[in-house]
Each structure stands twice: as C-alpha cells, then as structure tokens.
Image (cartoon, rainbow, N blue to C red; front, side, top):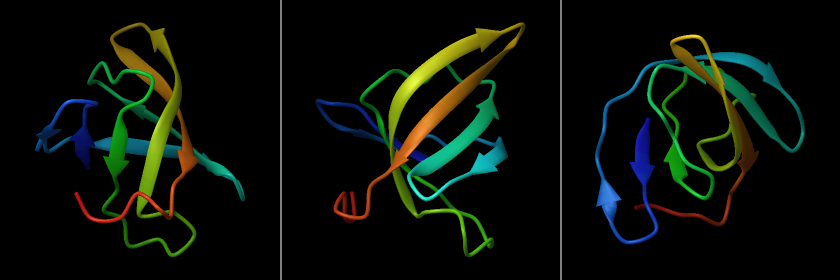
Length: 78
C-alpha cells in the first residue's frame, strides 16, 4: 500500500492482512503506525477490496495496529 499524509505523498511499501471487508470499507492489521486521515492506495488481487481508502481509526494491538479504512473511490491517483 502507499500512504498519503495530509501534506505530501510518502511512498511506503507496507504489508497488511485484510481482516474484514464491508460495503463501506476494510479492516486490516499492519505493523506500521498509520494515522487517522491518511489516504491509502491498496494493492490486492481480491476484487472486493477497494483500491483506495482513508484511515478512519487506528488501535494498537501488541506490536501491530488494527486499522479501519473507509472506501474512497474519489481519492484518485496519488
């Protein structure tokens, strides 16, 4: 995934595990401390996973972070 902070694009190659998918977004677990408001470009071969998302919430769980993303089809390329 690629992370866009509010000020600029920061191209970070991250790995995450998708935990659940709904019509409104995705829940995933990653070891990177994402922040609320970050825009994410997701690379996944699963058709139900959106290509873009906005971090809505982050919860630290041990050494990992549980993240809630809202689908963002209007985010476009960044």
